[in-house]
Length: 304
Ligand code: ADP
Ligand code: MG
Image 1 (spheres, rainbow, N blue to C red):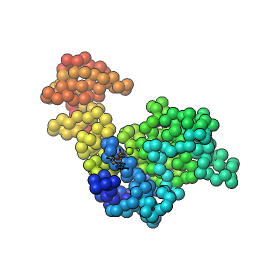
Image 2: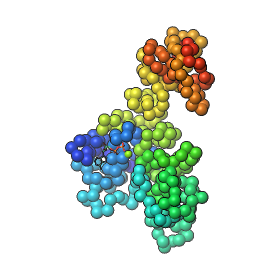
Image 3: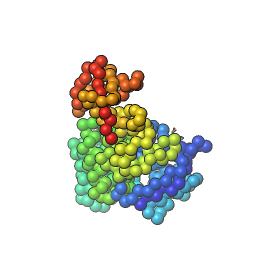
Image 4: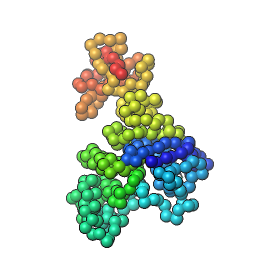
């Protein structure tokens, strides 16, 4: 189990993180969300042991994670960190990068393991390509595979799929997260993409103003967004009194009700239309299956 105990940290006098406290069990998937600059990467770096802590403690099982003051070489064998920068070797191939830290004494096992990981990140077609020739997204996948090579117990992923195009993203996410679950590898994912979280995370942390403002299952946080900031992470929403925060998909257009609005614009989003309508001189957003012409009067109800 990972234990982050009451960690407060700043690069200078300004505190970036205050009294951060949470646990992650073996094999568990924890997602961390927060605005850009909220301290997600800093938190992962602290867990990795990149900085010395002045306040608080971090443990993996019984071992305390210590910073550079106590460790000549940063990092631990049981933990890998895929940074936002990847740090790959550009002049050797994908296969060589992934196998780089595997023992040369067992060439067959090494090859088998490398192949398995290339499959997990869906890079079979590029196994023998030099890394410098790859796109950003492909490099990101090599970095994930390399981090998994020596079977860590805990994996830190910093916006892991941010450079990967939508054609690949969904299947790659499923493949990587399934591999981590099957191998009981705990994983912490810093992200601003709800799709990295909703189907996969066991727990979700929301960081805001240097603090953890929410810590629960993604389902619970989605269904009970405490603040507009949290709701905005999941999708289009409205604040309508007396209902409070209401997602666009919780508003239903009906034949008659006490709530009347006038359609302003409609945006096609694939499965639905996002209707922007004026309600009590404010814009509201409604997910609807059909296009409605601007100027049309509509009635709506709010479902919970
Ligand atoms: P996030 O990953 O959520 O975008 P970061 O953890 O990268 O946020 O950054 C949090 C804050 O710490 C930002 O204000 C950033 O400018 C600052 N910061 C990040 N790294 C350093 C550093 N090495 N030295 C000083 N300030 C830093
Ligand atoms: Mg970051």
